[in-house]
Image (cartoon, rainbow, N blue to C red; front, side, top):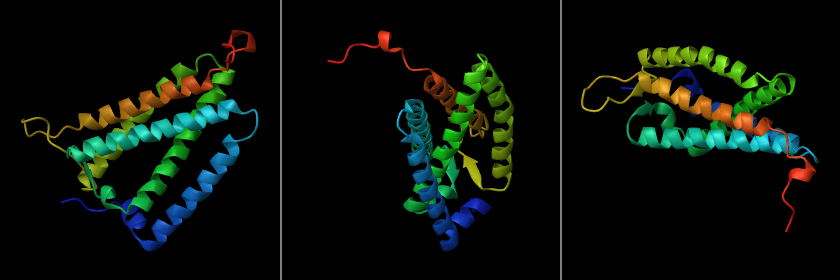
Length: 186
C-alpha cells in the first residue's frame, strides 16, 4: 500500500494547497510579464517550449498512471493542487531552458554541456525514485508477465523527458532568421 510523501501530505492539507496555489499564480504572472516584453520573441519561444515540456510530462503521467505502471498518491490530489504543481514544474523547466539559452549565447558547446548535466542528473533522479520506492511513496507496475519490478522505467522516464527538454531548449535558443531569409508575408 502506498503512503503520502511529505510533499504530497503537505499539498493535501488546506495550508499546503493554498500556498501551492498562491505560488503558482505568482509564478504564472511573473512568467507572463517576463515573456510578454515587446521584442522578446526568444522569451516567448522558451516559455512555449517549457509549456510543451510540461504537457509532455502530463501526458506521460496520464498514460503510465492509467496503465498502472506509475503509482503514487500524488495522483489523488485535488485538480487545482495538481494544476498548481504543473505551473510550478513549468516554471522550473523555464529556468532550465533559460540556463541553456544563457549558455548557448556564450558557448557553442551548450548541447554537450547540458547532455553531461543530464548524465549527472539521471542517477540522482533514479536514486530519488529508489528512495521513494523504499518508503512506499511511489510504485512501478510489473514488467510484462514476468512479475519483476522495472526500475528501468524510471530511467526511461528521465531520459525521455530530459532529452525532449534539451531538444526544446536547443530550438528555443536558435536565433531568429535574418529578415532577408524569411519568407515574404502574404
